[in-house]
Length: 349
Image (cartoon, rainbow, N blue to C red):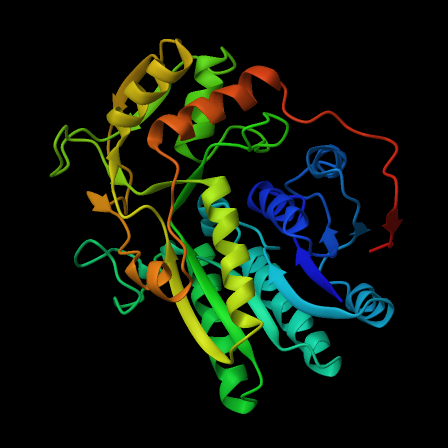
């Protein structure tokens, strides 16, 4: 039996593939490289010393999905695949609704037809919108404020409805906070297309000289230093959370949401200071006006995941910054293209 990983060549997906392979799982990986590179597949194999099957396609290709489920004995699915840039989702909402929601519907339809009911879904803390209080619990009101977040919230509701219609479904909704860092080997990490949307890769590229300075949006928030506070989690801790969630859905039924974060917040300026200490590089920054919709502070209550999944984030902020810099300094241009993907199976879109 195998685990299907959609979006498995992406930032979080690739680190999760490493954890699952090291835990002894057989993997089938699907990705269309819209926000990832083929080279990551070779590096996953290099880190783990293990092979897996790969399909280049996406979830809008119904024939490709059917082919995967027909050719493999899929036991469960971890679903990462989806567009994820908040700003782009605002300017191109139909693109996000079509890709993220339609793709998930296609996936769930295939799962149902092939008797696969165990699913770990890559959701997001954006489903909470502007939090009324922190730390945020899984019972906090939902109210995503952008199309990207709304696709996650809508998919969560779809998956809950699926379980109501058929109680064989077992689903873990993993609400990530702010993943950063990289694998300690420095072989895989975050390689965003274009100018980064997230803080850590932006800081890393400033440290590497690829970008001139960091823009800090707002210094008048109700926080210790006036800059926004967020919950940053090491991507390897996050990947291990998926392993724990998979173990849970394979043994239970129902739908449960889990916050995956550290339970602590760090400000933008704290992140800058920590990265400077970890890298030995100076991070020049300028203060800009607040961005619409940004909140003072946002961090997770992680007790539910601690107790029900037996999972907790272990890596420190120093670990996160050191590993992010190790990845950036060893891969200044990110991944290089690989031309020889052994065991890859190409499926035309």
